[in-house]
Length: 456
Image (tube, rainbow, N blue to C red):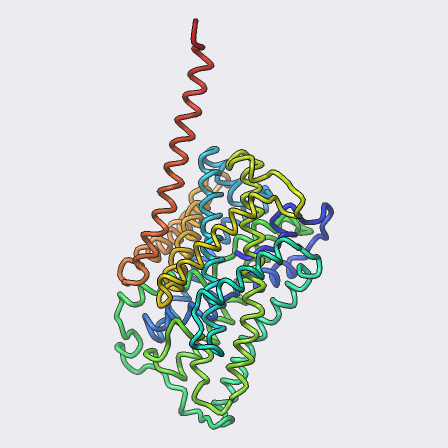
C-alpha cells in the first residue's frame, strides 16, 4: 500500500480536512495503481495469455469481499490502526502484533518490488547498466525524501496519481487509434482467441499461477480502512470503496483487453511493461519514452510513499509495545532515526538481491509481497464476524473470499519462479510466529514470578 506520511504516520496535521466519499474513491484509485500493475501484469499475461481477464475478474471479486468487510468494520468503529486494531480486538494482542508485522514485512517487500521495477523501467534507456546501480540511486533518493518530508512532496502525490491514471488512458486512446488505422495499424490487428488453447495457453495451471499477480495489482485497498477516519460521514466508507473498485476494475479490464488483443502472450515478459510491448510494432516512437517516463515518475512517488508507510508503521508498533521502544525514539531528524535505519536495512537487502539474482528478482519479490498482503487480507476476513453481526450472505461472501485467497496462495506452488516467493513469505510468517511465542513465554514467566516471588 502506498500511504504518504501525512496519512499513515505521525507526520500529518492534527486537524486534517474531512473527505467526501468520492474524494476517498479517487485517492484509493491513485494509491492502488502502481508498478505492480504496469509491470507485474506482464508476468500474469505470460503465464495465462488472454485468460488474464479471468484472473483479474476473480481477483476483483476477492478484493471486493475483503474491502466490503473492512469498510463495514470501519463504518461501525473507525480506528487509526484499521485492520491491525480490528485483529487485536477480535483475537487479542498477539493478533495485533502479528497483523502489524505481517503488514510491515509486506510493505517492505512492496518497496523492494517497486525499487526493482523502477530500475527495470529505467534500463529501457540504458540496457547495459547493472540493475543494482539504478536500485541504489532510487533508494538514496527515496530516503532523502523521507528525511526531508516536505509538504510540497505530499501535495505532489496527487499530481503523481494523476500521471499514473493518465498513462493508462494514454495507452487506451493510442491503442484504439491504432485499431482505427492510425500509426500504421488496422482493426484486423486486434484478435480474440478462437480456441480454448489460445485462451488458456498453459491450461488451468497457468490461470491458477497467475492469480497472485491479479491480486497484487489490487494491493492497497487497506488505505480505504486507514483513511475512513477522515470521511465526513463514516457510513460512506462502503460506497467510497465500491466506487473505487468499480473504476479500478474498468480501467484494468479495458487496458488488458487491448494489450492482449494486439500482441500474442509469448511476447510479454517481466522486463518491459506489457503496454509498451503492445504498441511497439506501430509508428508511435514517442509512446515508449513518454509512457516509461510517466511510470517512473509516478512509480517513484509510490515507492517514496511506501517508505513513509513502513517507517511510520514501525514507529506505531513501537509506541503500542509491539516493537522495541527504541524505534519510537525521536532524534534531530523529522523521522525517528532507528526506525529510519530499519527501513534503510530493508532497502539494502533489496539492492543486494537485485545484484545477486538480477534476472528474476522482480518476480521473486513481487510474489512474496503479494502473498504477505493476502495473509493480512485473510486476517481481515476472519476478524470480521467477531466484530460485526454477520448475515448468512456475509458468511457466503467471506468464505468465497477466503477460498480465492487460498487459491492465489497455492497457485504460486505451480510456477517455478513464484514458488521461491512463496517460501520467502512463509519464512517471514514463521519469524513472526516465533517472536509471538517467545513474547508469550516471557509474559507467562513474568506473571509467574510476580505470583511466586523468590524467597517466599
